[in-house]
Image 1 (cartoon, rainbow, N blue to C red):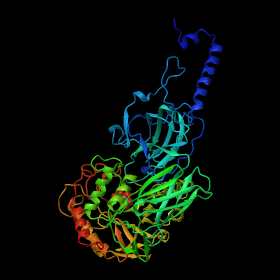
Image 2 (image 1 turned 45 degrees about the horizontal axis):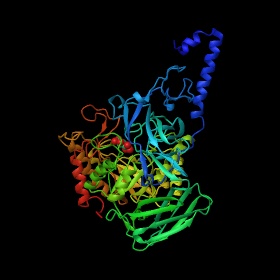
Image 3 (image 1 turned 60 degrees about the horizontal axis):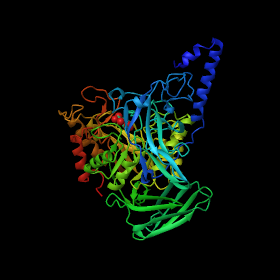
Image 4 (image 1 turned 90 degrees about the horizontal axis):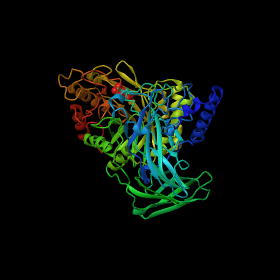
Amino acid sequence: MKLTLAGRLARVPATISRNLAVVILLCWCSAVIAAGAEPAAAPIVLTGADRRPATSLEGEWASIVDPYFSGLFSFHHEEKKNGWFLNQKAKPGDPFPIEYDFAKAPKLKVPGDWNTQRESLLFYEGPVWYERDFTYQPKERTRTFLHVGAANYHSWFWVNGQKVCEHEGGYTSFNCDVTSAVHAGSNFVVAAVDNTRHEDNVPTLETDWWNYGGLTREVSLIEVPETFIDQYDLHLHGGQDSVIEGWAHVMGSEAGTKVEVEIPELGAKASAVTNDGGRAAIHLTVKGLERWSPQTPRLYKVVLRAGQDSIDELMGFRTIETRGTEILLNGSPVFLRGVAIHAEAPYRTGRAYSDKDAETLLGWAKELGCNYVRLAHYPHAETMLRAADRMGILVWSENPVYWALEFDNPKVLVKAEQQLDEEIGTSRNHPSIILWSMANETPNTAARTQFIETLANRARALDPTRLITAALLVRAEGNTKIVDDPLGNALDVIGTNEYIGWYEGHPDTADVTQWRIAYQKPMIMSEFGGGAKAGLHGEESERWTEEYQANIYRHQLPMLNRIAQLRGISPWVLMDFRSPNRPLTGIQDEYNRKGLISERGQKKQAFYVLQKAYKDGTIGKAD
Ligand code: GCU
């Protein structure tokens, strides 16, 4: 008769069996400790990761919802050594039950937020586990990275039971070195993503958008040679069309490693060598370069090489600067005819991530007559920025320092700096991006100003070729709006939000509103507008009707035109988007309805009011 473990233990005197059980437990746990013991390296930033060949891990992943995070933490909140990341399979005779099984678990599609994939997860905030198998063939002298386009909000990753990285921040891409964890044949990757909001997160507890959780953008494997280019930056040198300068950083290289940059269409090529810090300064003279602009979104193939590594980038070259209260694009004043956009997927809703999402949203912006978009309130996907590059749409990109963070908490500043580094490091070569926004509607306190000035200085040091902005709150004295937030001193371009006609006064209050701006700098009205349910009609005095919303725009535009130093607008917002703050049944139903278009693609009357203004130059000069 085959004895089970219990049967065998039953035959042993009690004292010995208890000790035996302890020994078995220790042996069993030690077997798993080896799997997850060594600390994982911090993830790295790869510029232009989407331009590298990659093995996509998109598709159906096993998923387990784990609200108490018992798959990772013990009851006294220590990380388990035998957590669900081991992807264990129950076997006869196990000393303990395995109480999870990815093979039998329901699936979630990656990329994609979990909220819109399963009714039971629409409002879910907490940890969810993901697992998928993949076959792999490691190559000699190659490093392999697990590339994650975004995971909201806090995420942990293991490959074959070995922890490979941990990341905080829901809107920036990162890359985990999995070289030592992958092996030939079948492998498995496990991720845990926790979208729980915390006071000391970036953003903090309160936002006016849906907390879409999960592996919300692409996940793939990227292979690079042992010596590879991790970050690079190329741009026009000052106002000259004949010089492209910049740098490339090479990881795993000795000083003196050669870096080559080539633009085949221009017959231009240059080389440089890395310094002790791994950075090579690049200086490339070119002839016949056509600058990138909304009218001519000219992109060039740019090849960067170092050792065995080579990247085929797609880049546009332009200049952006301010002169007094003007914004100069390629040396000429430009007015930014824009609209604000959340990364809400048209039609299907949920977190936008795909080329199609990007082309639909930016196609609507183009149809509106825009040359510019404010991508709020966090860094958007590379697909969105590549589409803006192709379509010739200028971009305001934003770090999610939104409303009242813990500005006096040094740990929060480190988190905001990390996300800023990732945003700029990943997306620094898009010609479409002209503005790095540090924040949105933050309270005017000394701690806040110091926090964001620190970010602004960091952004300038990371990227001196772009303009720094933020969307400021505006105070009022009677019918005079006063823009004198001290944060304005740290900005190149002043962004201001106002909601005359919706949150303040009536639409015709705009007719009698004056503006007093303390800064001789370009100004962008970074938000204004009001709500309407698509298809709801009535008098223009009736809130939530399309007529009411259109009337706000009719009164806003002449007021905006009276602001002498206004150089752009991005009305709030292109498309209705989900927000848990907006429950009004039958009207909002958990959507912010300030969109010019509904999430189902229905254009509201206000869309056409603004479209006409852009087309006939009523607001800003048409280029
Ligand atoms: C604020 C905020 C937006 C928000 C909007 C609104 O200005 O910046 O994120 O959605 O107002 O109230 O609709």
